[in-house]
Image (cartoon, rainbow, N blue to C red):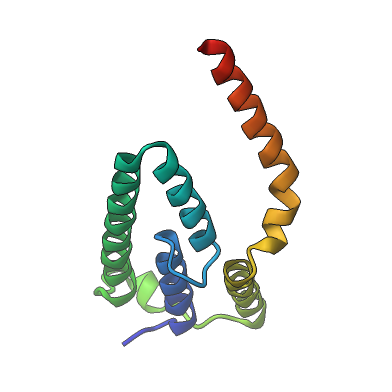
Length: 130
């Protein structure tokens, strides 16, 4: 039985977002890294995918231990539920995480010019090195 179900739900959503679950803000980043790595080095894409799977297994194990494990300390057992301010912060975080996962252009349109400048600078340096 969960003592603080709101925190357990938040932890579950954050644990899933760590390894790029579709619909969370990390999914577009993982896809951009995967597609970019595949064009440069396909073997790197395999390592990236295996790393994402390992993160998923690790996140699931951590969630099971924290949210579903035995409460051994007395101060944790006596913890109450969340108040309104904590719920507000939790839901704003979740909404932002899912919103950026569904509409990544909200953030990518703001970071696009900086990304393009960084790529151009990197390509210029690599051309000079050759």
